[in-house]
Length: 334
Ligand SMILES: Cc1ncc(COP(=O)(O)O)c(C=O)c1O
Image 1 (cartoon, rainbow, N blue to C red):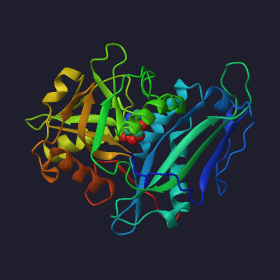
Image 2: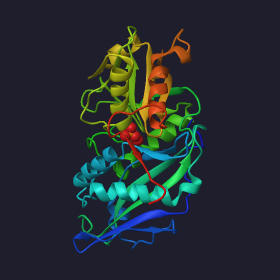
Image 3: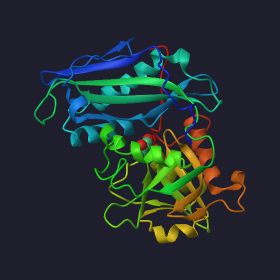
């Protein structure tokens, strides 16, 4: 079950920018966590919203850094395009992230205790619509919340049969409505004792896609990393980083390719990756009553998954040199 440590806890300031008359107005920091909306606002009636997720962390010498925020800015633009919303410029996005981090520096958790400051950029269509069409006015916001672990134990997955739920099917779009469609499935999974759903491809239901809130990867018996190639999963920034960490830092061969359900019993390790999940080992996958287990006879500390997690975590908290452009320091004296 998800740990309650990954939960909303309002921080003092959030960023707000409004789109009116075809242009973005100057953004500002607000101490009000509430939004007042018209009852017919497009976001309420037709779920016109998109969002992102990234983390800020403290380094051992007290600085604050964010991890690849440019990737979130770019992905948000893609989501906006697909949801007929105006794009939020990438340079303004990065500046807004910095502003929110800086304004909330007092509530950003200390280095090394496993917690971090989760940032949630999002955009909503705010003006009233009744016919089915996009809004003409929008709000872009970023709030932050100190968070702990998303998963508190090794993960138990089940293959989910509920059709076209979760962030699948709309390809690469991080929109609230996709997640709304997965709420029934996650509630059912939790009630049955699973931590997450594993979704298969919609067309043939024979290939692995991802889970409700994270991408998935496997380690083969000869120590290679494999992760699904698919147009209908969210392109995870963590996964992209995992692939690079495995190949460039650890010399592990990494392959992105379609992964058939038929072959997953042969893998030695399985893990989830995402901003919230970081890297979380998967203990088992229940495929219609047949239980596949991972890390059999492999002590967690010696696993390939753990080796990748260690390096990624060191990079993310500023303990190890990162590839060019991965770490953005938020200067507190600005
Ligand atoms: C459905 C889904 N897939 C994958 C991810 C992981 O993406 P990222 O590593 O960019 O956080 C997330 C969440 O963050 C997600 O919600």
